[in-house]
Image (cartoon, rainbow, N blue to C red):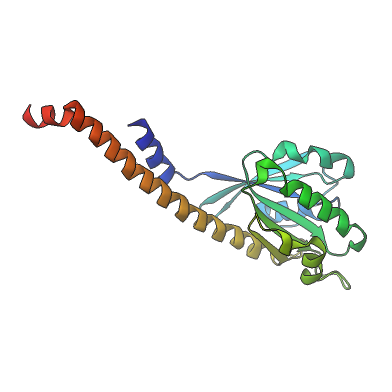
Length: 214
């Protein structure tokens, strides 16, 4: 009966969802992380390594890893990919010169085996700056419509004010609700199938007959 109990546990257990926040240096990743965790702007310096915070939204727990974006650190991003459910890519909407670099890093990530099931949220940050790239421009530059194997969403935001961040979180929440329904339906079907198997074993082994006649 161990398999059945495992399925029941999965049906009702509240798990923690791993999120990685990546992007080039100075994109606003750490500012966004601490807007999520503290709802305020904190003074940040370039991240060497990573920062991690647990974010709780409507009883849903996210473990968010903010990973340094300097060129020398990007080759180590893949050490954080295991068990990642969402990738948040933060784009500096004022950095037109390096948008192609962001695109290259994005597609390198999405091709990684450990991220094949991860959802993609792109934050177009610094939308408060005059002359910045629009969401449509960034989407086109990143060729997001070519992303077929991952669910994705692009959201305009301003990390300093927090504008747009809640909408990004809500997209992740909606994805989790959908995945939870699909997973629970599958687990429920497997639970019923497992119960039938155990019942069949009991019938053939005479266990039920013994219990009924004892």
